[in-house]
Length: 212
Image: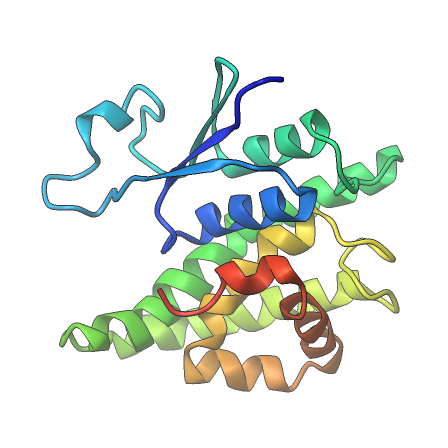
């Protein structure tokens, strides 16, 4: 039997949470090694060989090392038994890659850093929110939500009838976004997206979500 995979990262990270959800959806036993990249002095020196850019998560399984969340989650889906989290057809896999690319390139920064961090995280530490940053991020956030709702169509999940890596990539980003009042308000007006969120958060893997 190959050794248990190791996930390196901190639970506060949206991307670590995606990897955690995927591991749980697949039923994979794993070890989490906590790595705080925001600790005083920056990422621990022993983490840089795992991730030369000093980010999280990083991953190792039986001598095979990876970083970048999309690479990790695809490997977990394909290397371990359990329900498939990627479509079997070329068009479905292309759509999966498209949605994950949209989340990384267009959604993560405005929803998490410009809205959640400014409205929720910074005030919790006594720092004022940058209202202009929040205001400038809201139109992009609305566009991202509309695009995700469009992918849902009439199906329960972003790629149709089965939950996929796309849903699990989106979940932690939207979870942080919904902690801000602006995020909750924008989600509330999108019924299909809210129904998707309710289905998603009812799953056992969603226990990794919520305030850190």
